[in-house]
Image (tube, rainbow over the protein chains, first blue to last red):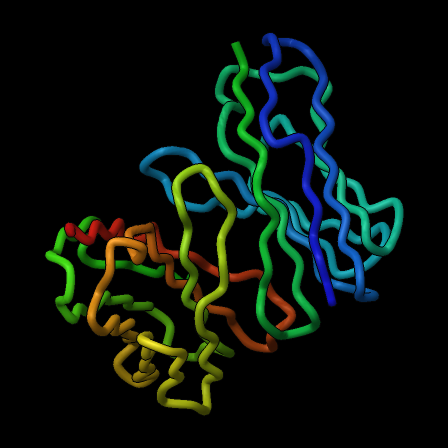
Length: 111
Length: 113
């Protein structure tokens, strides 16, 4: 069966520090991969999605970047975190054109 | 641009009641619609997926309907239980299907024992 792993579960980082959140999927190949951010009162905001290795679509201009170095690995990064980067980050995957499955999320606090 | 709206934003009901959560979308040309549940501080769990050609899907006490022409979906929860308390999110996928979901902001449900 397919599983999605996202870590860490919580993270506290100072302003200006770098960020790397990792997401991996097991039990499938060539999935669509997604990064979302959820802020209080704003709902789920799509940040990046990828339909294949090295193919990244950015939905919102921001302080973040994403990479997909392997088929089932999706990484969210920042060189210098801002206070406004705080939030709940969710990784998700889907087979082509089908149900979307989410990871457990990472609570990021930038202080 | 597709927009998804969920009403109400929050709902509190006594245990045992049947309830309906509403979702509307502005562009009726959707590929599918998915309902999710999110517990506080957790990821999203998929509840039901309705393809554009379908009118409803059922899973246990949950029933989701889709009226594409009017841009509406409802999630019906029968005999609600305190364990149903969570935020319920609706999301639609546009054709050709290999596109990201567009989410509503969710309805926060509290079922009171």
